[in-house]
Image 1 (spheres, rainbow, N blue to C red):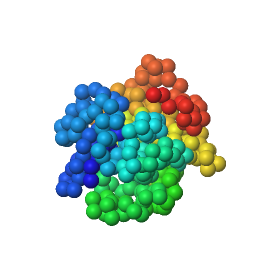
Image 2 (image 1 turned 180 degrees about the vertical axis):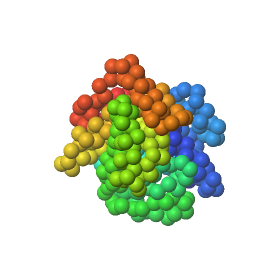
Image 3 (image 1 turned 90 degrees about the vertical axis):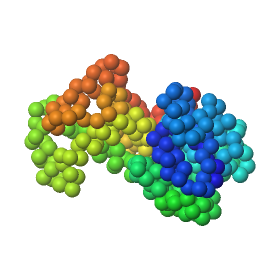
Image 4 (image 1 turned 120 degrees about the vertical axis):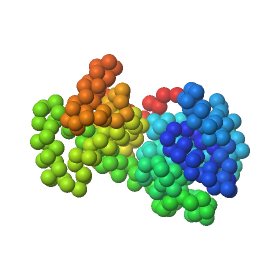
Length: 311
């Protein structure tokens, strides 16, 4: 099985590390819109060619795994389209709305290539491609033997493209929303001078969430991955709007994730929790003031418009 990647961030690297251990797999190349030295090194250090052109990256691959940011998922499919050939499979693992995946599938299948909707349902590290996934699409059942042989931990949702990603997008409202609620509540508590009272009250009311230890994890996820999560939540907003529910809630979660991702830190600093949270809050205020950010007040509407994807 020959594999190439479009987008070479955390998910693609983790998939590479685990799939490369399979004797039947040859990982050929990667392309990423970010063409800097660190991205190139991430690919070449793993034995891949790092290409500056998408066509050269995917040439000769049986499977093409698209692992870009949510706001560029359709663009990735469009950029690859002219270089696809019959028999190739385009595996779209991006966290986007069902409608967006259907758009991407139409682009891919128009070139007589196959398309698979894949949703990654847990952090990719340390399990890589053995992370729980959902798959959907006309070819999903035909791929069962290949996925079993390679050690994927997968569940087939059905033949309809978008069925797998719908589960993730609906679930993401809760998962990324809980992160946003946690960081925003704790920063507000620190600013109001009532941090201990709020944390103690939350720990008593919701003991299963693991207060206060869960706070460091929630801050790490939003600080390290906020920009990517914001893009995902804007797609979640589209999904909720398509279903007739309140997509604006997901859009506001995206605002929080965006602001956290802009902070010059990847985790809470050491020291007492209240002081660490206050320091991050101060850094976020500075980052917001520096950019003049008002963080996407119409994020839901913007995400639903494919024309808003900047090349």
